[in-house]
Amino acid sequence: MEIDELWVFRIISIQNLEKDLMNGLYSKNSAPEDPGRVIIGNKEIIGERDTRIVKCYPETVVNDYVPFYFSVRTPMLFNIITGQGVPKINQNDIVYICCKMTDLTSLQKPWCFTDGNAAKRITKFYNDLANLDKIDWPSIQSEDFRHINADGDEDRVRKKHAEFLVKDKVPHSKITGIVVVNANVKAKVEGIVSQCNLKIEVKVKPKFYF
Image 1 (cartoon, helix red, strand yellow):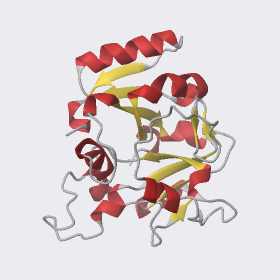
Image 2 (cartoon, rainbow, N blue to C red):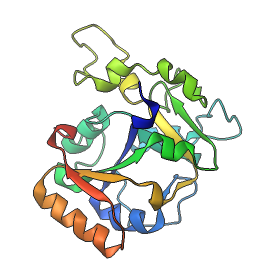
Image 3 (tube, rainbow, N blue to C red):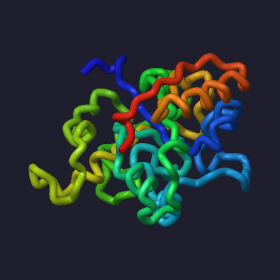
Image 4 (cartoon, rainbow, N blue to C red):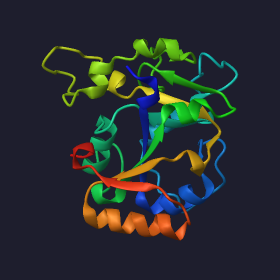
């Protein structure tokens, strides 16, 4: 595994994109109040992250961090586009914020990663890149995330949601790319990037979606 080539991904509503590009990416607990922000996650799980201790920084909780996934085409995205436990949102309105993992580790602030969904009690936290082998990479890459899957791994959904966490805020200068579902959305996003006076490559990757 080439650490310098590892990417991490954050999915957001396209309605939040302009503000995120202008202001950077905030953790839930550091974000300025914004009644207009579109929340795409499960509110119950977000609430659990308010009290879930980050074990390698035990004075902090998960919602003190900006979360990214190592995986794309996640069960979370499937739930969002089908409306399972969350408000239903069309895939056209979901974009991926893409960052190089090493760009985030170079920030002068705490970071860590997990071996699964950070809200789950059994999930482990690490702040040493030597422990990247603790992530189940076959689960990250798998497209079969059913609880009853081909190889009988009942923990795959949790492991596929392995996270990379950055304390408080990620500046927009660390956003290296944006991925969208089709060319029409690409044109719209490129317009938003241009309005923000930024140079961020926008790519169409249907395989990141369902």
